[in-house]
Length: 248
Image 1 (tube, rainbow, N blue to C red):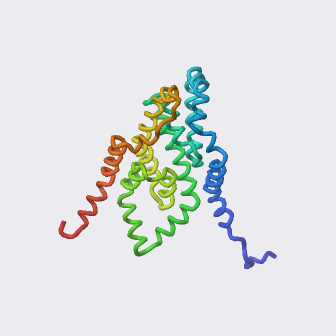
Image 2: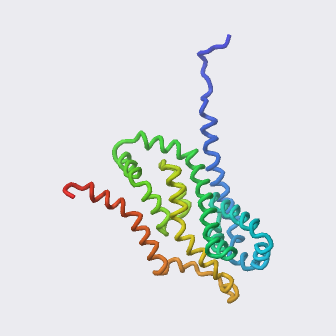
Image 3: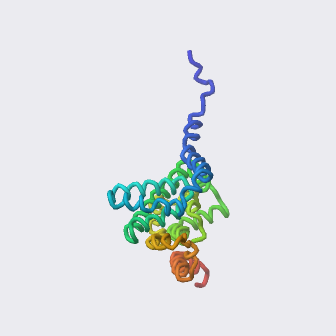
């Protein structure tokens, strides 16, 4: 007869490890990609293959557009080097309107993949701890929940926030999935427009024997509107804070 009182294996041990595999895979591929791809996904590579790429685009626009989105999704999802090159390439191959649309679509899908990988693994346990927390942690958690939309938009609009941080942090603190997706798609449009616009004029830059100057992003006429949008996103939080003060 089987001893029903004997210790049984912990049923959640293997599933718990399995939950972390997607995020671990992303981290491993990101490290490998950093050392193996950073010298290949460059503007020099784009310059050397410009005629080939333009020929492919002209002969099969839909297939090239689909391939571009797929490659861009992989770059973002695995945090591989070359996201800026990919964004500029979108403008170079497809123009401002279509290029911006494809760039935003691909970046949003890639960001969502990272979000889900982190949420499924580390994010699930961390969110559970935050839900059970008290004191300062609880106040921070409640503040985030009350201002979730504004915080998510700020993460996208403030140029100083790395893209992978804006993908991982929301997953780890338990923001709503639908809010993450739509704020990502909306929040990356301004920056996406700038990168795509640079790509539209890339042919002329190559003809002069130069490389695109991404420092343009920090010019006053570019950074000013982005900071203005950031201030607008933060405005609801400021209003709530002011209204919450006694006597206001």
